Length: 559
Image 1 (cartoon, rainbow, N blue to C red):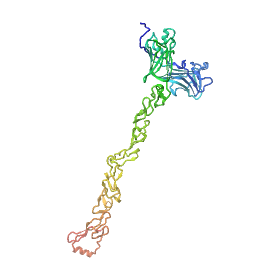
Image 2 (spheres, helix red, strand yellow):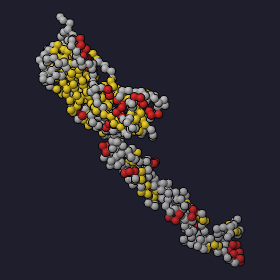
Image 3 (tube, one colour):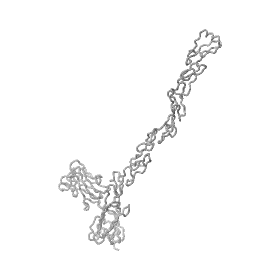
Image 4 (cartoon, helix red, strand yellow):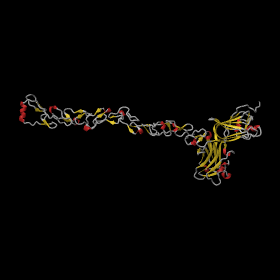
């Protein structure tokens, strides 16, 4: 068996190509523009690939500051590093100060290394970049730039394999950047991938999904070995979804793909009918999507990305800085689930009127206001213990033991405090009652004032003829008046005086007169008194007494 032929052997190897200066590649024609420049020191000089004494080389651009240079690569390329070289004839680098980078949509890129003549930045992970702006914000003078290098990947590469290997013409040769296939097998296998079997194929796994805008295949001008190439593109989402049909009349392949297609792998076969398939270089160009779109054909709309839609990944739509407040999901297209809101939907909605579906998913405000019994912007605060109802605007009644009223309807869930009644415990007892459920009758308070609603006390004292804490005790038989502080007079037959005014309603005891029966009428002559007292034994009057039946009454206490 000849060593040159291997039957259907899968042979794969990962090819790592060095990043190249994209501005020096023949297939890339960059467009250079700038703000006003000094004299003839135009921005196009930065492509000279020379950096030395500016006066002698006539190779530097001088931009009046504040100013900028814009580099348009015309297509997006995977960029890893940007290097700027300044004048070498200025020790202090005065024309190389306050320089900054920005790309595509104004994204700034931090400077990694800087001297008076050298400035670089590393872009990790690498980005697809088409536009680069170099600017200086100095207030006067010029910005001198002698050379700019943009290191990146012109074409995609990956892990390649093929159906068989002719000689040493392995699969990775189609991705090594060498197109000249020479005149013999040694030179051929340095530049080209060659298979030699029925139904040959070549395959590359790009290591991830990319948007493909163009596929070029450089072939060998020899019969049908590089003709009739059929290319299929596959991605993880839809599998094989795009096919470029082979044409035996065309050498190699050059296919623009618009809109761009999402690809993880690319497979090339031949419809030429020959067993040999020669691929000297497979050039796979990627691109990105317009801002706000992503995915296969750039047909998907980006979600609500924090920082704007320019933070949306053009391949899968993920938001590089996360979702805007109020949104979740990989493409940030979903509102927060019902009942949540805010950053990462981590906040819980409050008590919204109409349910939590009335909660704003961004800031948590309740669109129809708060549920009865709650207040505050997110409607999370229940009414304090003294209020209830819509917006907590209603004041609770007097619930027993300070228990709060119902948040929604204000009813007291237990009983009312002494002195109040009704469903809401906001009705005071009428003037004659007090206590729990207004079941206790007030006493006799001074001047008809009402007793204390809760304990029945008379706060300003008792009405005439009554005493006690509750003013419900009548004066005893000897007293009358306010707080029973007045002494009754001499009412007839021991009857009691009037409780209020002290008068004797049935008259005075003999010997007394006046409204209050407290004035003595004992104005009798001495002789009559003497006779009466010595011959008539009668009971002594009040305030008189005798020692025996024969003795005379003598006054004990006389007014």
